[in-house]
View (spheres, rainbow over the protein chains, first blue to last red):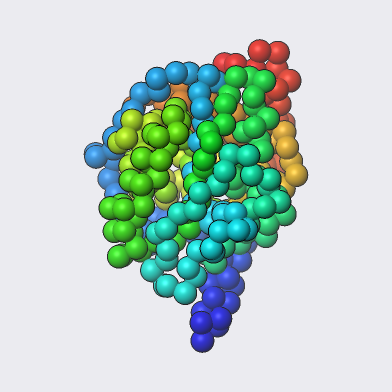
Length: 171
Length: 96
């Protein structure tokens, strides 16, 4: 039963990718809006090309050695995985049934550009020691857990690492 | 993703969020938003397209200097294979 549900989600995600207008409709009407009125704002303390940049992705990226995200809970999984800044791309994988990650399976930089970030070193960009992977499908109680627990914890770790900027990427 | 970005921003770290779905960005905006008209699951570009990916990442980083109000959105001008991608490493200074 479980594998049937996962297969159904994977089929749907493949469809989204081939018919992105459907995903756009879902984004417009299916997602609970969160207004811009409460948006916090932190001004950069240093220019980005002198910064220590961290990546945070909702594309379900995690080290192969870390446990996969929970694909059995229909509400999603609000947990996160740490990704070391010096990890080899070949040691990363994706667990996420809600988008078609065939391209990212071939080259993870299509959703998590850690190798591209390292290459910007000649321009002054530094790579933060830790990056973070989430699985972007979180609803109801898991969404609550994200806002109360896991997102603040990632923020604290980024502060502890001295990250000056964070770039977020979707699946 | 906008929710996580907001929390990080609340802790004093500026954020920029890439998106391939402008409607999702409008619904749940992050403090700074960069829309790329690329495919789902390929927000940085094609597999193996190193210069394309590097260009998009560099332009996303540039949003830290360009967006000056909460919820600001910029859209990158690229249209997949129809666009030319200038490598930021090949631009002399490379720094805007």
